[in-house]
Image 1 (cartoon, rainbow, N blue to C red):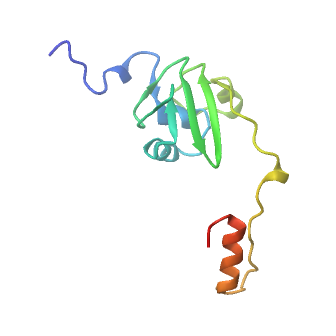
Image 2 (image 1 turned 180 degrees about the vertical axis):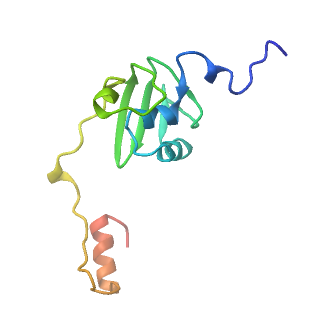
Image 3 (image 1 turned 90 degrees about the vertical axis):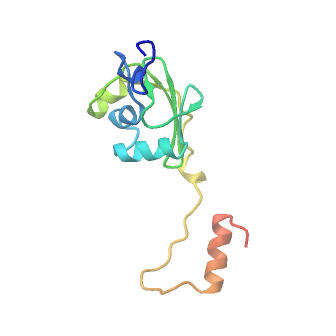
Length: 135
């Protein structure tokens, strides 16, 4: 059994860290639980492969994260275990993400007046049409 590595064997190697911890440490998500939930939901890929939160990342890996309606594509340039400030976090990865869409192209949100009560059937249909849902 000396040849067999346990499930945590590769993750314990020097120069690697859990993907959920790294995503949180470099400030791609606000909390580590958000990073873990993104991994469990299939929104994180390392080198093109869907990964679980405990997957180990190392220098040179490409991490794709779909979070907050935007895809972030980053290449790990430095492995860190603790959360750092924003200026230091930016130095830990190379950002290859597509630019965010301009604000004028973002779809408008339907906003109801406070205290307007429950939406009527007509209001609901208008909201569905605005959001692009079939109805």
